[in-house]
Each structure stands twice: as C-alpha cells, then as structure tokens.
Image 1 (cartoon, one colour):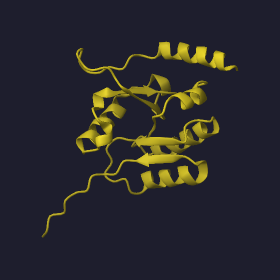
Image 2 (tube, rainbow, N blue to C red):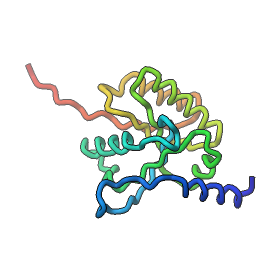
Image 3 (cartoon, rainbow, N blue to C red):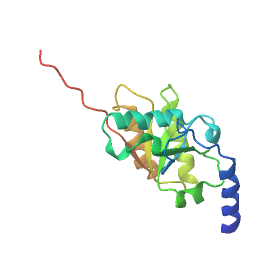
Length: 165
C-alpha cells in the first residue's frame, strides 16, 4: 500500500471516530492526544476509564498530566491497518490493563500483536485503581521489555504514610 493510500485510509478512519466528550460546552479543546490499545471493544471502546486514570494521577500530584480535560483519548483496535502509520504520527501511546483475572494475559497478547505489526515501542500502562503495582504490573513491564523490546511506563502508587504505633 502506498503512503498516499495509507494517508487517505487514515483520514477516512479519523472521520468515523466520535469526538471525545470534554464535560462542558465551555471546556477548552483537547491539546494532547493519547492513543490507547487494549480496551475492550477496540476502537469502539468507552475511553472514560482512561480519562479517570488521568484524573486520578493528576489528583495524586503527577504534574506531567496537566489538566486531565486537555487530553483527547482515542481508542484504537490492535488490528487497525493504520497502526504503523499512526505510530509515526502520534507520540503518546498507552496500553489498557483490566483488573479482571484475564486482564494481564490480554494486555501481554495485545503488546505482542502490536509489536509484530510495527506499533509503538513505548507505552504508558493505564489501569483502574489497584491495591499495589507490585506483582502483575511489574511482571508485565519486565516481560514486555525482555521478550518484546517494549518499554512500559508504569506510574507509581503514592506512598502511604505509616503511623507510628
């Protein structure tokens, strides 16, 4: 497929994507785009869980998030023919990891598929609130690096203050 064909196909795909809801009519337009892989239902997925994760990190003091409303979250199916082209055009990528029993297996399989298709090699790991990042998130991060050459950025949990006895 030529670059012109890919670009035209990408434009057609972008036209079919719903505009993200920013909450209020007077909200500022989104200034940062976050492409998200691994959400249930692929490109048709509800992106609210990702937006909630950005809000949670912002509330925890993660300054890089900035204004959570300024993010345009775009779900992408791992089978998208536009993945390789989007990888060259979009700098911010994320991988959704569900908190169900099969979430980590699905996330690794998604990473493997994306890696084989020339997808991004660096992604933010996005997930619902978890009691700890130890264990499965760390294992996924290590497996992605070791077996796929993919760098997963895992946002640390805030430290809890330990009260003296």
